[in-house]
Length: 559
Image 1 (cartoon, rainbow, N blue to C red):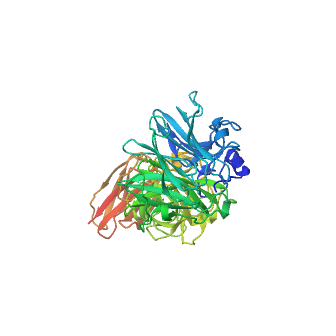
Image 2 (image 1 turned 45 degrees about the horizontal axis):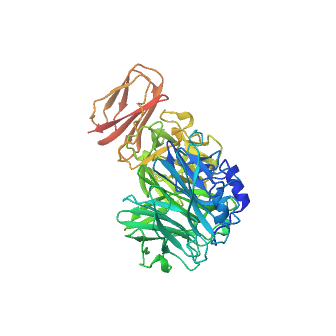
Image 3 (image 1 turned 90 degrees about the horizontal axis):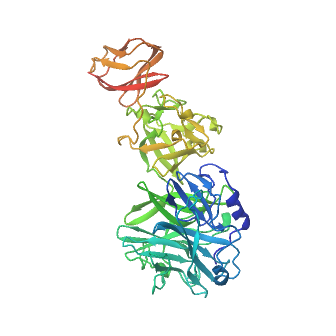
């Protein structure tokens, strides 16, 4: 039954260069049947259905750029395909790529809509870098083919290299179901004497796009059911089963064999993400990046790349667009090392959100509450107000503040993980992302919305408040230098002396209680010594001295 991809969609893949709407990946991320994401040097690559096999790359898994070349020049293809698949017109389906033997092996499928006369071939290249003089794809010919309606239809290849070094190809669509066959790891072609084993579907049922993941002692088989390729009318959804043997049997959570209709739903349509399909897995820096396509319900059903998270629970994987579990976190800028801070630490409505030096204050802690499809409500631990885009603005430079929860898109944020473990944060109300303008390292700089620039000032490290810092923040610099606080400990109500270096500009001195409440504030022209009244209640406090050039925080003990 598979697969008819409209010509205009294919043309759109090649011409699409900018995101059309908010809260998704950036750049050229149009895709159908994406390959497993694969890294070559500093770039991640995605191959997808299209004339000549389209490719796009990213340096961080968020922003994608179209490769200037297709694998096969458009309008050309290996001559063996003409015999194996009469009527083939140059549109290759569902490629998959693996690195082995010092080169990249790209598996691709050739067919015509609704036909079981299909073939999978493989081409190799020493590099994926299209600017390299070594970049050239050499076709290695046919791997498997099909002809009869009861055959495992030879499309949708996915390659799996086992821990014992053995190489396997899973493939199939409708007709005879999903099959697996061992490949020769030295050639990438079918191993001598190997035969295909059916592991799911059959009898013309709607099964396709298989993919195997191994974790612990189990192999997990993912596959698609339903119908693809109909935009917002697509009914694709992803099912899974597991086995202790690579060749099955694969059973679902109820113990039903996937050859007999079993398959636990792993992901289906949700919100704008219609008809998710064609799973691939990249494990990078401790994260599981699941690639797949979806039909965008907010953009006329255009097919696009989606990158989700895979976790494991109770011996089973789960796929989610949430990268952060519900809980309380510190949000640290990758460039400055400073954290999200309700500036002024009152928790009051309208208070600005800025970057500040981490002092374990309550106003620097943020509660993440998932609201669906990788989006979150972010509330400040001091007072419980939400991070809010002022007046729902979308212009560059629009600031963030604290405000009561209104359940609107100005207060919901898509959080997407990058390959290095940091995150991009985007309000659902627009396409600009939460940034520190000008790459400022100054405490007190308000967070604002800016156009994507791949600056570290737009990347956020999200960790529990007690976790070790993931970056080494630069030392804050004041006019002069904070020389000391004395006495410390100090008696309650007594005068506290704050010694600063040479006098200079205006400074602000704040004292916060251990739960983040502001108990003292004063702004004055700095002098060598400033006297500050100690709080009247015993306990642990935090003293913060700020100027336009920086901030320094110290713990203060009142007896």
